[in-house]
Structure formats: C-alpha cells, structure tokens
Length: 399
Image (cartoon, rainbow, N blue to C red; front, side, top):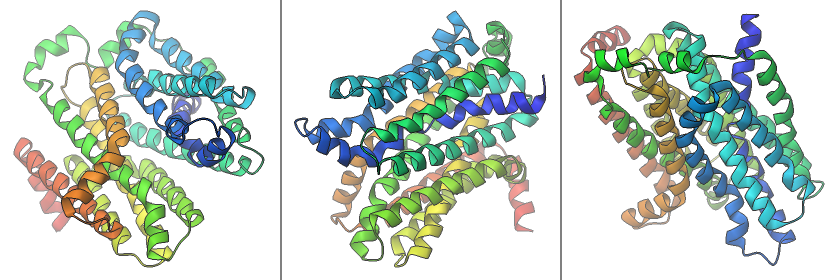
C-alpha cells in the first residue's frame, strides 16, 4: 500500500476528534426552539459528549483487545457518523441529548487508539512527526466543521448538524485504506508485551500520574481562555462576539501550525519541548490580558493554539517513546485528564477569581499566565533532575 495513502487514512480519523464543540454557537437557537426545556439542560448538549468520551476512552483498549484495534476505531467512527446527524432528522430534545452522548462515546472509542495505531505502523523517529500531524488534523477538522456549522446556522437550528456528514467519507477512507492488524502486534508495539514490562520495571507508572495531573491543570487554564475571551473583548470595549470567533479560528490555525512543525521543534528542544509549550501559553495569556485592540488579541489567540499543540503532543510523545508499560492505557488516562480539565474549567475560573478577590477578566488572564509559568517551572526542574543531558541542550540553545 502507498505510504502516503496509509498516512492520510490513519490521520483522517483525527479530523473528528474535536467535532463535539462544533455546535456550541448553536445553543442560543436551540434554547429558543426548545423553550420548554431549561437552559441548563440545553447547555448540556455541549458538555455531555466530554463526559461520555471519558468513559469510552477508559474502556476502548479493553474493547480493542476483544474485537480488534481497527474494528474498534471503525465502530467509533460509525457511531460518530450516525449520532452526528441524528439532530438533523429528529426534533426531540431527549433523543438529541442521547445522540450527543453517543457522539462523545464514539470519539472516545477511537481517540487514544489512533495513537496506538501510529505506534504500530511507525518507528520512534517517525512517531513524533505523526503525533504533530495528528494534532494538526484535529485542528483542521475542528475549523472545518465549526465553520460549516456556523454558516449553516443562518438557515435554522438543525442545519448545522449537516457538518457532521464529514464523518461519512472519513469512515469509508479509514475502513478501506487502513489494513487489518493483529491485536497482539499492536499491544506489543505499545509496550504491552511481558518482556518489556519485566525489562523496564523501573520506569513504573508514576510519570503517567504526573503527566495526567499536568495536562489536567493546563487544559483547565487553556479552556478558561476559550470561555472568557468573548467577554474579555466586549467588556474591554474593543471587540464583538463575532471578533471573538475569529480569535478561536486563529487559535485553531496556531494549533495546525504547531502540529506541522512539531517534529522539527522536538528535534531542537527535545525534553524541553513541554516547558517551551507552557512558556508560549503563558506569553499568550499575558498578551490577551493586556491587549486593547483586535490585532494584538489575534496574535494572543494564535499563540495560545500554537503553545498548546506543542505542549500536548509532547506529553503523548513522552509516554509513547519511553519505557512506560502499557502506553495505550497511559495515553487514555492522559486524554481523560485533558477532558476533566476542560469540563471543570468554568468552575476553575470561579475559584481563581475568588482567590484573587476580583472579577476583572484581564486579571484572570494574568493569573492564567502565572499558572502556566508555574507549570513550566515545575516541568523544567523535573526534566533537569531526570535527564542531565538536557543541560547540554540548554547550553546549545543559549550559544
């Protein structure tokens, strides 16, 4: 099989990873249509996918061991394909809510397994670039589906769900061009074989706990930006909600850029890549917090996406190119940490503002910057302690 076709087929499924958020702008229209349903219930249409995604992420590897990795991913894509367009066809709130839950469950089935398949088909040198490309495809898919949904919203509240039809070609591309693989071989490629476990007991699972905690905190701070940017711009008097949507698009473009460059960035900074991503995020938060015009805010939005899509793939790379046993489970836990951080971000912002004793949004963004700097400092210290070789890298960068 042509390597380029295989690569595209493997990456195509990532186009759907961020699809759940595509109808967020549709909530006011749906709330108006379902006027007998409490607003809090309507807003659950945006959060329910994350809850069920976490459930399926934790069970996906167990399902894959029973029915096969390609089969499990294909089932997940099929669920997204069907559940995504249910609201287009049915005007019943409870059925729509269930379909959104199933959408999240479907994404969770294949989300972490995509990394497992990359580990199977590619060696350590190629994996890092593939993780970056996977991140770029996630961003591209998010932009495409969100843009299409936004344009279709002009028709009526149901039309945006047409955007989920992108899952149809993705399903058939993956089904046709990704070959069947033996479950035992995929498990072996992902650190599940007994020999590797016995040979590297010292690696342990403790680093995974640290990575999950790190991404949980970073995801919470990152998502606060997405939630509050429109209010920040309108409150400071230099932008509208429409302008804020452009910031989110630039955030996605920043993520795509980082994904395409990730392999090269990793070669230059190596173990310092995670800290670099967090520093960029801190810089972005400072820019957004101090900005008083659209251009500067657009730059801050772009850097936010760029920094996060350096940070997150670097953790995936650390897990999958190390001696950590059962990297499939470790990757799944990482994604759970991310989604938990996203889910509690509204409450996180309340806690931060309460601690600061101010509701001023610029101050919240500066606090986010301090949070990212703290995470970067902790990560840098741990990296330097674990690997003395990074001292040489620092010296080369400074020269």
